[in-house]
View 1 (cartoon, helix red, strand yellow):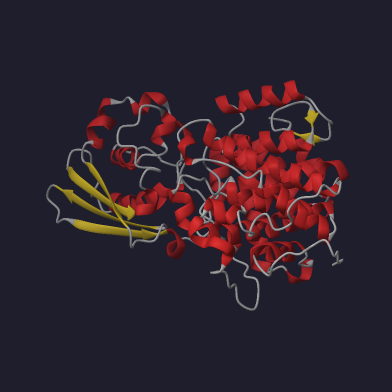
View 2 (cartoon, helix red, strand yellow):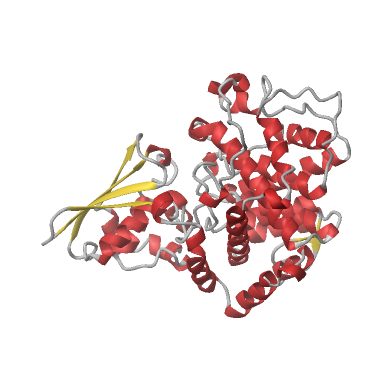
Length: 450
């Protein structure tokens, strides 16, 4: 690393984020790298699957109108555009279905905020597959750390960590990819600290996927500006009146921060979405699937279902009476009713407008009660079912303990074939499995085919 007397960064999280960006290939944990590759595959699939969503058409039109330096690909467009616009579009599109991965320590979606930034910047210099994966991983670890520091109070205050903490991950990954100097990396973080934004009030609208696009685009812009030696407060993240103090006020001046001797790597704890809805619903869905396997969810016999989840999900995915398919993706009542009526929560068709209005679905929703427990982990759900002729029984599921990211790949492949045409999946396999010859340009070419 180079030194610069201008930098007076205190010994805190800004230093640690920059340290992440300097890890060599040999220092990156093999398991985390493997999971990052799985996430890249999953991100490409869910991005492509979102190519026909209404929000996709609108964001495509926006970037076409804006134009810019034509170096970076946008999913489903025959043209290239400026990197920050491609990141905005691809980040938005990849989160359009809300089918992308989640990290519960980060409290948000990492792939949708970071991969679009990395890929957009990779195409102009035609970086390799390994460059993309490594840059993503260090960015993801940085975002996890920031998300953890901001904590649940940040989320409860109304901020969307995918957009806020995710922006810092996008910029750290971009700094590594662009090989910025140490000074420039600190300034990129400072620039990002005054740009990062995103609110939970947008949940259930096109504004939620836009949050991911904003994070990716701001990461690209912050790193690019820093590369021009744009000057900022290099500790805009952790300084007095910096991002953490203003967005998580209980943590003034980072007096609480003590990471220990070594920086942690925790991306391998990511949780993949195997159902086409908010991740806050997934533990309850898995518990209900177990109940269904034991004949507790027959529509004529089920009487009541009590779902107990973490209070973190209050106001997030507890829409009691959804009116649209998008709102159904944030409703315990709706997904439970889907399962009672025999619908597949992994299928996109289960979240269409006509099903939300279905009278039998509405009838079954009336049997559902949801309550929240402050002591419960975000990844856990407990479900109590009363069904005629059977004793009342509880079913539990913990996404962190019962689902491993390493073991998830076969289900991710099944998910891919459910979402995309076989021919396009086979092209993607051929592209990614040929790692030595896989480049950002080739991946961009694949994206533009949709």
